Length: 316
Length: 211
Ligand code: HEM
View 1 (cartoon, rainbow over the protein chains, first blue to last red):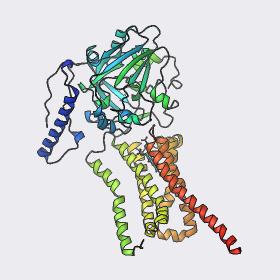
View 2 (view 1 turned 135 degrees about the horizontal axis):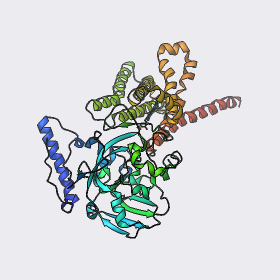
View 3 (view 1 turned 180 degrees about the vertical axis):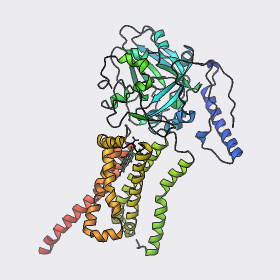
View 4 (view 1 turned 90 degrees about the horizontal axis):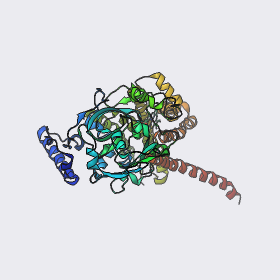
């Protein structure tokens, strides 16, 4: 069954989310009925993919891997986003309630141009690129995801960090009405992650607004997130509402929760095991046998110099 | 409560057997139609592990339930429940060895030694083996009731190891391990309370008869 996609549209013309959601629901039920009639079987709802909004003018970017991409279905139904539940399939079910318009990101701290940026402006800030990155979760699985966005440095340069800025903190939205997982104190909310400024300025670090050429699904961190491909997935904050530049190292969600298990750096490193499981291998989603995990998730050539002279066992 | 006669018990056992096959049936059904999600191996590991623990709890629930309700026929289900626990543990272990590690014995040995959650899980599984092996009537007779019962008290440490295994493996959300731990505390606690009462009652009897 083919669902026709609308032609490319400018971000300013993006359908209001309420209407969009109603349309999605309609498409889903229409799809279901069509599938049921066409094949005589009713497919589960998650199998029927509604048309998502395509992102306009996306060019293919640098640093992309040519490895097989993880299917859209897997990328969008197997997620860690504890604000929507701790099971992998819960974010896809519960994140529908997240309203991503209007949306603003507050830029604070050690910058000359502290201000609040609306999502429309963020989407237009720099040309959108497709970056196909490996994603390695600390739990021992991995994916290959075609993200859409631009280098985080494009944003950082524009807000002009002061000489005191050494770190950047990314804060995820925390709204109890929209995020059922916040009712449980599994982590300290809001979720906050952080990078050293030079890590954030690295061209690989991505300000991300889409995947598979389309607007980010909510469970993947809509409307805007970061993607730091050489670090374990939890370092890449989702649904960001605040970016704060600081002089001292910010406290980060998983590090606060279990400092012995999750360090500030959390670079992918097959030689430094998690205290409770090995990090030497990983299972690529869709594959049967495990494959060896690569240093810095295969991005050593680009990022190893950031950590020259550092003891990576100590700074895990 | 009226006692069930043998024919009725046979029916209850058949129904129980079929019910006990439901979790595995569901897993096979979902697996066959690609319904286990993006990471089917993880889904199988979790399901078989979860049901191992659930069957252990059910097995341990038989005695307290029987005492509370007087439904003595429950005892006739206990062996089946225990064997289903072992069955799921074997599947769980096989999933780990085959699907997860793909017979990488060095990695498996390292895991068992280095990862505390695997160490305790493995210990629980190893301890379950003699219980499953001595579950037949013939084995009960061969061992003698006293020795058999002593051996089968291993189920208590096994259950504790199983809950510990779950507790230690979760990343952060302890909800389910905590629930299992509560159930286990209740089941073992009931036994301790009853035992203490029996001891006290026995101690009182001679005193009373003297007076
Ligand atoms: C009586 C013995 C055992 C019991 C009761 C048990 C129980 C469990 C439970 C309840 C889970 C979590 C399920 C969930 O998340 O819903 C689990 C996961 C797991 N178990 Fe076991 N288990 C046992 C033995 C073993 C053994 C012998 C091994 C391997 C040598 C093992 C390896 C694992 C692994 C690798 C996981 C998944 C961990 C993860 O995803 O992080 N278990 N088990």
